[in-house]
Image (cartoon, rainbow, N blue to C red; front, side):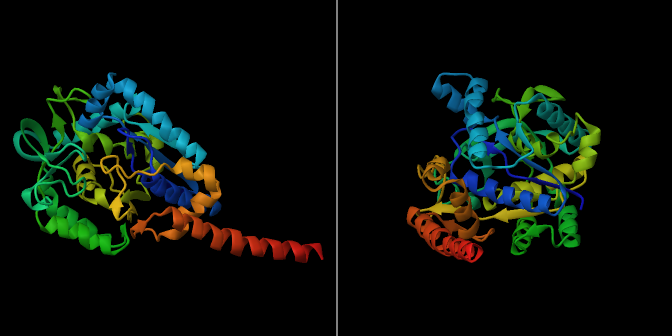
Length: 363
């Protein structure tokens, strides 16, 4: 028995919660419940990512402010997790003051260490995933994730010198071979490092919707320094030292395979720079695909999990999510597959078992 801290990714509030969000959250919830049964003191964190260019653009399109826009979407995630019987201990929103304080502390620590420097950037950028790409990363001229054209961007930003951490990261993963599951994902991480790490932007001067840098308020924090920091700001980094000391380092970050680069390269390097202990583990899941494609608002193939709960009940839906796809693999969601799993495992097998047990007890 001991402390067990686990996290979902924080979900971007440019759209309502869909089945892909629910999948990771339900898996995380099952692990949290298991550790509580073991007698562990569990802290289960989820939340929403509310800054960035996509939110600013979505708010403008809706004719409202970014804060009002996020205030209208974040509660939809909270209500969805309530309907899905998620047992999280905390829900962090990156617009909260506790998060702002912690992000600025992390930025200042990395700046003081000499790992954040002002520089000019010229390159390719995908607005949909808020990430920079090289020509080699692209699918033709399109983002490999969203299948839409990238933009050429040139601006002066502050950069985190990720390139300085190549050997330190290799050494850490070599000495912590069990830190990433499934185990073959460690090779993927090491492959990224050995290809050479590129410095990445931590600020935007052309963006106003974000957390100002503590050392230059004309810039706001760019997505990854803001978003990834939620894992420590929620448990007191920058605001509650005793709480942070109790829960950090995290036991497992549960993440999707599309954000492995940011969580397994950017995040540990940021923590190394700031002098913060690294996470103990990462659990990398696959995607629940629809028609062979990842669910996203951009693709227009999202499935609302609450529609399925209304039809199959929360336990039937959760059972399908947990049983149909082994964590770490991709799964292919179909309505027919859900019906089949529900009928064969729950209505037939479990139903027959319950009926037979009841008969024996009755006799």
